[in-house]
Image (cartoon, rainbow, N blue to C red; front, side, top):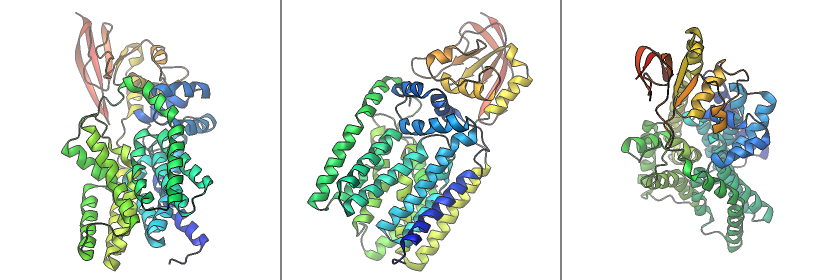
Length: 464
């Protein structure tokens, strides 16, 4: 198989891409947009100059939002249109995983790795979400391919492409740069000319990332991750399950790796490619866990750039175990696909359309409505799916929040925001909680509707 033509190599990349796009598209519009997706939509549903004005308060996803803006401007703000960018990104990620796997291990391993990523439940999940994570995964793999090409033939043009690709990772999500750090393993032992080119590329990347550093500094006091806590055994297990697809697949993959190590009488990978993939798989998660004990940052989706490493590593290990290893690979990929199908048939995102329908049916527009959560997110959800605002304009800035109809009050859990609210006497509705955190009244809950992912409550309030 190692003598495959260029056209065969293209097919090997195209098939995983097609599988990834198919798996991500099947149920693309089945669930409503949720809070984070509505945040991205709120940022880009405005003139381009106004989009740039939002970045000092939202430095992550700059590149994603700039790519999403023309799509939304042309196609509209529907859930399917908004999510298509991520569908395309996960297709690119699968194709590039196949190409990188081919370069690191061989054609068969590369093709298998691309298929593994294409059916990975969390790769597919974020390939269906209008957020920056699928794009981050694609760009991490793209930067790896750019580095391999530059090391193969270290020209100025190739090093420039590498520098741009790493900068693009940073402008998509700053913590995705953790998945770029393992690339140092590929440079170790390279020729002097290649190392000099790598150093120059890193210097160029640093210059390109200066505006991102400025944006991050402007965003430093906003505490966007106030809801993240220090690592626990459960959260660490969740990260392992995220990267590997599930905890049991992680255990199976570890058993196969130990079997290969026993056969070779060595735990250490023999090749630089093997060492690189191992570091790519483990270092970003380990670094994020360690840092999170000082500053909590451990959110599993920030490590989506390590999923391609798992896919490539799994194919490398199993294919070196011979026929039984290939059978084990097929079984594990089938397991990933089952998990993906199971995930796609379940509804998990909060039922914001249902909440809006309920409020309309109950005549809540005549009463006051208290929303529990980040003001920008909960207001955007209610305004997007309901008829409370003539223009159905989403909100993101504080002035926009203040401009929404006066029937709304928000109990905002963000640091420095007001959790208690002033309410009018009479009927008050609560979305996202079962009681009113009223500052000026005593409220009695009359009825609670349990919707998927959120509660809606009807209360009666009297002045204290």
